[in-house]
Each structure stands twice: as C-alpha cells, then as structure tokens.
Image (cartoon, rainbow, N blue to C red):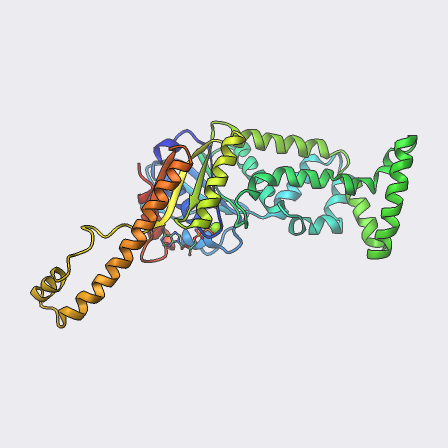
Length: 369
Ligand SMILES: Nc1ncnc2c1ncn2[C@@H]1O[C@H](COP(=O)(O)OP(=O)(O)O)[C@@H](O)[C@H]1O
Ligand SMILES: [Mg+2]
C-alpha cells in the first residue's frame, strides 16, 4: 500500500467511528516520511488522539514537527496539525470578502461566530478546505487527512455541498432577498412569503436574532461565488489521480457495512479508492488447535506445575482465538469480494494500544511495502 501512495499528494483516511482512522493516518504518515518524504498529517479529532498517537502534548492549527527522528528516512519530515474550523473559516471569509467592511460584518456577526459548531458538516467542510490550503501552500509531498469521527462515514463527502447549500440557503436567503432585489412580481411573492416567515420568527426568537441572520446573509453577498468555486476546486482535487482514499474498517458487521457502502459511493462519484485497511484483525493461532492430550503432554514435559489445568485453560484461549481468527478471515473474504478485488491490507489487533510512535510504527509495518 505504501508503494502505491508514492504519487498521491492527498491521502484521505475514511471509515466508521472508532475503527482506527487516526491510528492508520498516523501510521501512513510515518511510513511515507520513513521513505524520505515531507509529510503532513491533518486531524479534526478533538479527542487529541493524533497527538497522543504521535507522542506529542498537543497539536495546533499550524503544522508542528513530529520528533520521529530515527524512524524517518533521509530528508524525511513528519508534521502534524489539528484543524481549527473557526480559524479556517475566518481565512476563507477574509479571502473572499469583497472589502474590509464586508469582512468585518461577517466575522463580527453572532450567527457567524456560532456557525462552525451549529451547522452539520461545517467541521468536515473546513477539513477539506484546510487540505486545499495546505496543497496551495505547497511544500508537502503527501498530506494525510484523518477524517472526523462522524457517525456516518459518508457524511464527509457530503459536507462541502451541504455547507455551501446552507450558506447559499434558499430558505435563509429569502429573508434578505426583498431588500436586495426590490421590484417585480418575484419580489412581491418573496416579500409576502418572507414577511410571514419574518413575523413568525420575530415572535418566536426575538428581533435581534432575526437582524443577525439578515445581516449575516447580507454580509455573505458577493462571497457565494468564491465559496462555490472553492468547493468545486476541492471536489476536483479529491477526484484527481493525485488523491487516494483509504477506507479503514474493523472486522465487524457494522463498520464493514459502512466500508462497503463508502467504497460504492467513492466509485460511483469518481473518487480514487486505493484500498481498505482492515484493522484489529485476529490472526489464526499458528498450527491450528492442538489435539487433546498433546498440549498437556507438552506442558508436562516443560515442567508445568499443573499441566492438566493449564492445558484446559490454553485450549479454551486457543479456541477463542481460532473463532475470532475465522470470523476475521471471513470478513476479509467478504470485503474483498464486495469491493471488486481491490487491495485489502490487514493490521493485527495489537496486545497494547498503539499510542506513542513505537506503537504507530508497529501499525505502519503492517501496511506493507
Ligand atoms: N491495530 C490496533 N490494535 C489495538 N488497538 C488499536 C489498533 N488500532 C487502533 N487501536 C485503538 O483503537 C482505538 C480507536 O482508534 P482510533 O485510531 O482513534 O480510531 P478512529 O480514529 O477511527 O476513531 C484507540 O484507542 C486505538 O489506540
Ligand atoms: Mg479519529
């Protein structure tokens, strides 16, 4: 999988919640930097998972160098940053505001200040936007995006469209339209319509909120074009051969179902899917299950205190491993079939949680050449 990422500037790790996206993102970043590349890993996870995985105290909106030293190849650099959705949105507004007054009007608006937290998909959209900034700024051979812990993995792909639709939102724009395009039949209808909405909202929520909404939307006038263009550029970038999507899954029914749905969606919409990382796989016990008696005899030979009890205990453990191993083997086969024979890379369930660089390196090693 690492070889195949050579020419991909953008690597997006997506999948269900809790399957190991952050872990795999860190591991991919580390492996690529291990090949002497300059790599940035971007996370949105507010839980600081990436920071702890990389053995850092915290991350910021600006890239910080990861002290991976001996794990890096010659010339390799690993950087990490944690998305600050508000800061990203502020930069976006600053870029597209027609003038300083418009910029201040939006940045100082109460509705705007709550937007990133209030609108579904805003975090995801800002992650995509930040990705675009990093590509534009240049300097990285690879940028790995650890997608947010969304309840549904597909949310991420919808985010740019959803957020631009919200900002352009017909329902909300109706409220300010009359003032912007006065005259004509359309205006009269809109005015009548929004007048009702206005008076209703005014009663429900108070005049100030309403003025804020109107002001917010009027402030965005002249920026819609820029936002839409940006969203389209991001979409093009993610659909180009310079990007690669890596789906992360666990060998359990729910995340597997989401992984297959995500793969289908990526294919249908022309996003380049590289393969799936099946994480936390239980390997089958080597040599299969021991024959009854053989284990006890071997333990007795080794001088075990109570070979009978120990053998029964070991047999139960091995049987459990065998069951899990078979389940995971089945998951892998089902998954490979469902995603059209694309690459599935397995990462074993580690005995210890992969925190700190040593653990991440262990996951990275499993990702192949
Ligand atoms: N291969 C693995 N073996 C053991 N624990 C793992 C493995 N991969 C991830 N974990 C642990 O599982 C938890 C979830 O992983 P994380 O990368 O944060 O998932 P996500 O980003 O998809 O929510 C973390 O506690 C992590 O340390
Ligand atoms: Mg995560």
